[in-house]
Amino acid sequence: MKLQDSVIAITGGGQGLGRAMAEYLAGKGAKVALIDLMPEKLAEAAEACTNAGGEAKTYVCNVVKEDEVEATFKTVVEDFGQLNGLVNNAGILRDGLMVKVKDGKVDKRMELSQWQSVIDVNLTGVFLCGREAATRMIENGDQGVIVNIASISRAGNMGQSNYSAAKAGVSALVPVWAKELARYGIRCMGIAPGFIETEMTGSMKPEALEKMTAGIPLKRMGKPEEIASTVAFIFENDYASGRVIEIDGGLRL
Ligand SMILES: NC(=O)C1=CN([C@@H]2O[C@H](COP(=O)(O)OP(=O)(O)OC[C@H]3O[C@@H](n4cnc5c(N)ncnc54)[C@H](O)[C@@H]3O)[C@@H](O)[C@H]2O)C=CC1
Ligand SMILES: CC(C)c1ccc(C(=O)O)c(O)c1O
Image 1: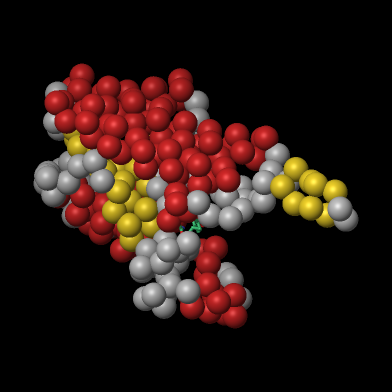
Image 2: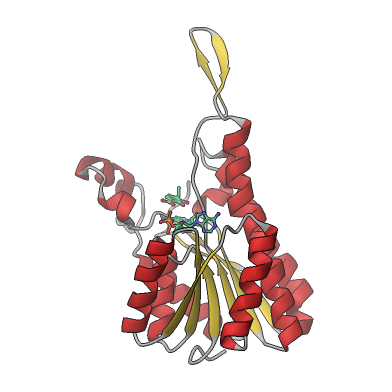
């Protein structure tokens, strides 16, 4: 698929990796529909996309709410006249051990609400947006691509029962949707990033950063543009479907 003039929705497009993807795709001539909870961040991201040479519109939407997701994708198609892509990127972290023994007593450390909030955004949100994007693409007769953003933690990371389960789930949806949607001209791929430089890691102490990167074979964190360029590769390669690409500097957790 050509990126020039393609319409691509990006959830969590207001900041971090989502914004980096939006700017990168806009720079290649794509029209981006930025979906996020935070209006101010959305406005900043849209301006950056315009400066990069693309077109951007913003949509305040909670990906967990079925009615908001339905209304948002309807509006995106009304605004742009087509939909050719979705990057399911919005995600949250609420880390914690499942149980911990303290003073001989077993403590349940991960609250049900902590589990559920991550499953809601990182797994159910991906399902709702994927289902809606596919519906709109098929109804509109548009060829399209859905990219689910997973994580290296999908393999199972200590302290991330909720996050690892959700990311394993969105990885499993990739071959399911690739098989179900191929007949409509829709491909589905995933990306499982390792540690990527973000504002959060930028504010970490140098010693903590050094410890974190020491275990990565390439001895550095990834850059947001390295995830964004992988998204672009997926869109442009019409034989890519049903697989999750690992971009993690060679790290295994
Ligand atoms: N930063 C990293 O090192 C890695 C990130 N990832 C994944 O990449 C994706 C993006 O991560 P970051 O950019 O680091 O996160 P971030 O926290 O910087 O950005 C996430 C964005 O999603 C939005 N969002 C959160 N909940 C939402 C909801 N319910 N509805 C709509 N928007 C919502 C936030 O407002 C925010 O703008 C996530 O899925 C994350 O799990 C995966 C591996 C590594
Ligand atoms: C543990 C993995 C590499 C990780 C680290 C940081 C974030 C983040 O800041 O959002 C993630 O989403 C991760 O998957």
